[in-house]
Amino acid sequence: MKILVIGGYGTFGKRLVNSLLHFGDHEIVIAGRSKEKLAKAQHMLRVSTDNIIETVELDVLNSDLVEIFTALKPDLVINASGPYQLQSGDSDSGTGAFQVADACLEVGCYYVDLADDRRFVTQFSKQLNEKTKQRNLVMVTGASTVPALTDAVITHYLPQFKSIDSMYYGISPGNRTDRGKGTVASILSYTGKPFDTLVDGDFQPVYGWQDLNRYDFGGSIGKRWMSNCEIPDLDLIPALHPQIKTVRFQAGLEVSLLHLGLWALSWFPRLKLINTWRTFTNALVTMSEWFKGWGSDCGGMFVELTGKSDILKDKQITWQLVAEDGVGPNVPTIAAELVVNKIANGELKPGAYPCTGLFTLEEFLIVAGRWGIYQREMK
Image (cartoon, rainbow, N blue to C red; front, side, top):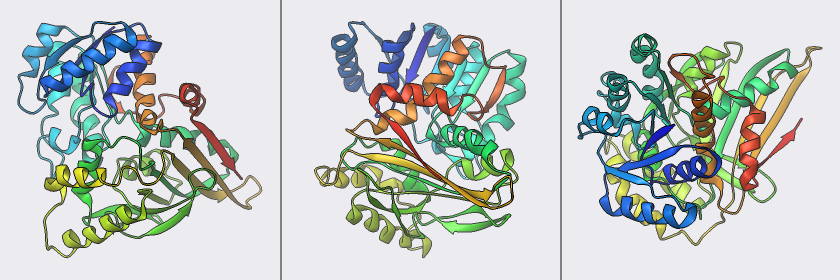
């Protein structure tokens, strides 16, 4: 397939491009706003893969995407350019046009994104599913760690429970690994802002980057501070698995100074002293780089499932994913790669839908094994 990767030089986009070139038979075109970054990425790919990659300048918010896609004639477009809050029209209500996906519908090509924004992912199918089916296309949103890997983990362990009552899970990257500016902007958009999460069967408000908790990953990762994050799972998991009555997700920064510093900043929006920290994304990313030598290059994810066994005894399973030696940023790209290959093989049905139930945990771990990323289980 001919694949256009928007944001193909970014933290996650460049890793996805490398995987598609090394482990697939695809023609890749990378796109983005910066001519300089495109030229640098083109050179690096020529050196590392011996491929001459076509590039194109575009801005997902301001370019005529239909004209560009018509000229390029891609079979599939991957949108790896965040933050996704700005790409769904009305960023407050989550309604409006999905610019990249709409352009794909217009020209008749498949679409995959790595979106992590709650409103973007939950509104995607509602607005685009019928039109996508009519065009006999496949469009998948949220092909990233959450919700894709989350749902794969639940589905894998579900048969070991009579019922799952609650789920607590989180992600913490190593401080020395690359920082995705779009991901940082996404986190800052809800830092100190209220959002709903499922608690004992009812949706209740919590605040972004608050409710500090100290979680011990053990091993090479150790203890990390964790705080509330808003992700698509908070709506998708209760809908997919209604037996689960509590869903709690948190994320953590390895360096305590940075994590607790952001926790302190979260009080400004909560107390309405400032509207949002997202407008300070560039400055805060630059400041975080001052501490890049601190901490480690080890990151991980954990999922704690609690419920009842077949004989109705209390049961808990803890699953962890461990990424050492700076390979953590590969994790969010694995779901997208799996989905791209399934589209290429004609395995996915037409429609627009979130990336849940599209691959197994075993399929994910096979790809993760390329970089030595491994799982741990505790029962």
